[in-house]
Amino acid sequence: MLPSGGETRHRALRYSARPLSSTPIQPLENRAFLALIVLVTVAFAWTLGGFLLPVFWAVVLAVLFSPLFRWFERRLGGRATPAALLTLGTVLVAVVVPLVVLGMLVTQEAVGVYQRVASGEIDLTEPVAAVERLVPQLSERAQELGVDFDQIRENVATSALAVSQEVASRLLGFGQQAVTFTLLLAVSLYVMFFFVRDGEALREVLIRALPLGDPRERRLFTKFAAVTRATVKGTFVISAVQGAIGGVAFALLGIGSPILWGVIMGVFSLIPAVGGAIVWIPAAIYLLAIGSWGKALILAGIGAGIMGTVDNALRPVLVGRDAGMPDYMILLSTLGGLATFGFSGLVVGPVVAGLFLTVWEIFTEEFGPADDHPTAPGVPPGPATEVQVDDAPPSGAEAA
Image (cartoon, rainbow, N blue to C red):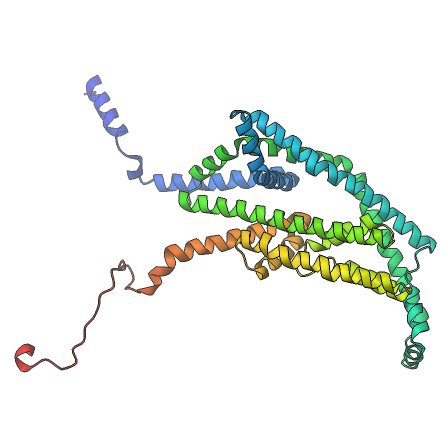
């Protein structure tokens, strides 16, 4: 006998009311769905490929200029799109255009240095000849030990020519890849516009989606923003200041290609514990060797007294304090980031290190105290109890 329509509807309602979690296949479905999420996410990241770093720099710029965006937004009565457009225009005028112009000037001076070295106008073997003239005894002693100054001069000249040619060719090669650079820059600025305008909403979506716990996620996002601001604000500001001081010093002392050498000093200033000394110390030695004692002393004073003071005074304040990381961690993460990600590693490395420290801080705070009161496996830790031990053993009556 077939069931009636009412009984069929009743069974359907009864079966549909059964909770899905009670079915044995539900855990398998959850695992399969999580695997699908991981697979699709990895495939999406692989699809982006070479655009991951431009997207990362878009996030960095959005974090840095979010206060300016909020200021524009308040001035415009809460209109987000015009405020984001004004922020994007500010980035173009204040960051992109100066960097492009600076890159063109550096390329021109690098080519000029190579041409002067190749033509012999710049003679980097002069310090060796100066040592031979000033300390003849050293030259004689070196010859007794089998040291050939002629070979040293030849090696210096060959190395200088090779280095200058390599620098010039790399800069020219970078200029020849202007189309690729322009495309990546356009992608960064385009994505930055949306990150600036919709940053708060995107962050809330990620907090709701990630299964880490909202307080933890908010803390990680806050740490990411703090380390990003501290790294860029500290590292790049210090680099720009030191490069500018070094370039001006080279220009005032009549040393050729001041923009090129200033930029090189600024680049080396990005690396903690290295700084622009790797440029101005050899330059001061060269000035000493060619007899320009006054210029050498002035350059050494500017390098050690001003540039060194700027680095030692500003780096702990702008980087370490805001980032909340010790100096050695900043150094290791910066060098590791450079080795792994290239130029972008200057920011990626400290950000990863900051998130690493934050994750372990959260773990220690939430799970570390449980280790103070070990309990049997499977037994939840209970409150600590105070055990009192009597000094004297119990009497017979009490024992009974």
